[in-house]
Length: 442
Ligand code: GLU
Image: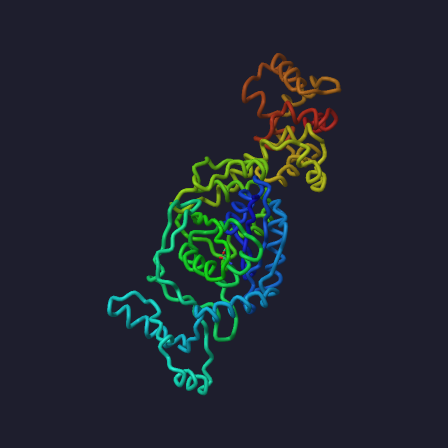
């Protein structure tokens, strides 16, 4: 059966390279086996969810080449969650609680002071009908907790191998807040059942949730999907990434001019057994994904690696793949120009800088006027090819006796205004005789 996966961001901020790691791993696992990729907006938190973030997430996914087969919003699926909650209540697995946040906090502190784990003590289960009525009369609003089974829940994790959590060590999770709103835990399971999700691939910060959610899957009579928890991307200093800081957001990387596949390659290959290298397409990247070869250690990366990968990717990119974008940048010269400059660009927009060098004007170089004038006189007639540079410089060498750096550097400076750049044998035919003569001061 082809896999059905989902990427389930909360639209409460701009997604970053760590979030996209999750999306990409899901995409790769689904698409290499002809499966489906669902985008699920976890937007039950009405206060923090924003339409602009939801839109930005869709744009980010599209930029990376991930078009969802289906997009759903939890905010539009409340009836399903209500039905599931009713089912759990009927089974005695969802119970009302009346404690305020403050009370819970005090209780946790007392437990910790006594060296006990701060686990909810299920006091609400022992309330009598009168006590509950009294709370309601006071105007207290109840929230609802799921009654964990207090057993060892285990699963074969796609990344971590055999995994287990004793749910007796956990607090019964709150599924419905006092304001009636659903926390993420229940809607996620309801949707995974309803949408036939077969694989849940998400960050290892969700391992504990998985034990809880497996109990909920079972309580609702749903098939338990396969789980895999990947390591989280952190910067080299070990810092986690935060949606709130906006750092390394996909939008900011796009605006900084990075290629989607540079970002995708880094996001997916960091922290795996594969060498981090630029991969040309998502399909090729999918071929490299093996969940069982993701490391258990944090996936550390240096944000500066994006530049390196971007450059390496562009150095291998064929003209046809960038032709339209080069044209939009106002870059001419066709394939010959791209092949001449691609190993000198870090970002695609750098090609424009080199195109400006070809078309000029270039920074005039005072240089050795006599040397340049003698060189100018030796410029062969057009048409020029890649061989023209060596024909010409051989002649200049024979005429002036200059060689090596003393021969090439003054010519490069005069022709390009710079002392570094793409090979002149490829640039010279693009610059052409008329411009070359002018730049040599002839
Ligand atoms: N909205 C959750 C998150 O962003 C989804 C986790 C999951 O994949 O189940 O962490």
